[in-house]
Picture 1 (cartoon, rainbow, N blue to C red):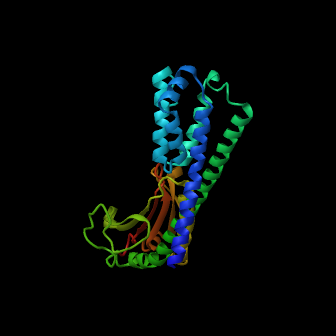
Picture 2: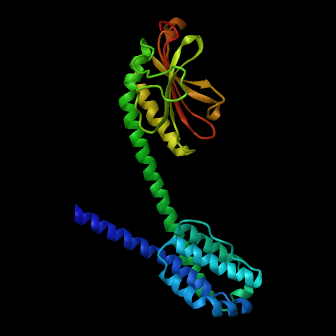
Picture 3: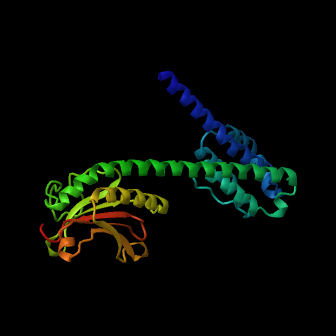
Length: 296
C-alpha cells in the first residue's frame, strides 16, 4: 500500500510539472516573438535574460502569474500598451488568457513572428484548452453522479421512516427540539440535505420539509427529482396518484403533488401527502411530507 501511494504521488507530481510546461513554453514563445523597438531595447537591458530563465524554471501558476504581469507592466510603462494583468489560478485560465492576449497584439508588434509558427502556437494552445475543458466536464459529471448516488441511497433508507411517522404520529418520533425552529429540528440524517425541518402549517397540520441544494445545476436537480420521486412512489402505497400543484416559487409555477385519491374528500384528508419540486433561481429540490388533515 505504501509503495502504491509513493507511485501515485510520483505520477501525479510528474503529470503536474509536465502539464505546467505548456504555460512556460507558450509564454516564452509569445515573449520572444513580440518586438517593439523602444520596449524591446529596455526589456533586453533590464529583464529579458533573467526573466526567460525564471520562466523556463517556473513550477507553479503563482510564479507564472508574477512573470507575466511583470512583463506586461514594463511594456505598459515603456510604450503605453499593456497586455493586462492575469489574476487567475489555473493553467487552463492562463492559457485561455494568452490566446486572448495574442488576439490584441498590434500588427507591428509581431512582424517577426512567422505565420506558420504563430498558427502552430495558437493551435497547440487551443488543443490544450479543449482537452482540459473536456476533462473538467467529465469530472463535473462524475461529481454529480457521486452526489446523486449518495443522496438517493440515503433518502431511500430514511424515507420509509418519515412516511410511517407522518401517518398518525405527527412526526413525534422524528421531532428533535423546537417546532418553531427555522433550521434542522429532526433526528433524520439525510446525505447532502441542506435542511430537514418539521413545522406547523395551517389548521395545526404539521409538515416535514427536506431541502437539497443543487447549486443551480439544472441537470443535478432534474436527476434528483427523477430518482427521489420514484422512491416516494414505491413507498406511499396503492391509491396514491401524481398530480400538479400550482406554486409560483417553483419552476413553471408548479410542483408534483402525490396524494391519495379517495372517492370522498374525507378519505383523501385522512392520508398524508407529499409534494416535490425544483425552485426557481437556486434550483433547490424541496420535498414536503404533510400529515393527514383529518385524524392527526
